[in-house]
Length: 79
Image (cartoon, rainbow, N blue to C red; front, side, top):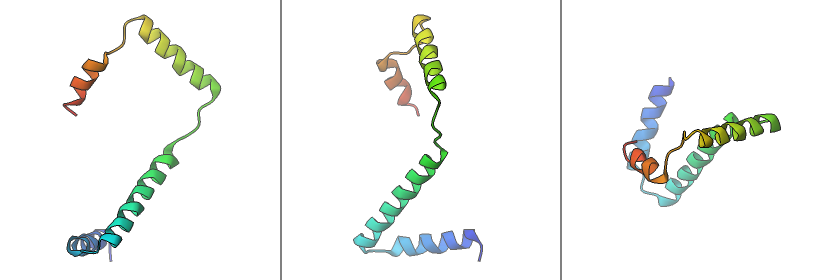
């Protein structure tokens, strides 16, 4: 059985599921899987990289390459 078929079967089963405790467990499992996936892609940075990012940010600020909170909120409305 390929993965697409398994997904469809699970979706069909989930659509008919009425047991809240199982739904809560599945939601917890999903959250854990998403967090683990995110964390597995994170890599620690060196202190040199950290300082470099800070220096770049400071230069951006000094050179006016910034956006206000208000503009950022307006922009994010279209995401």
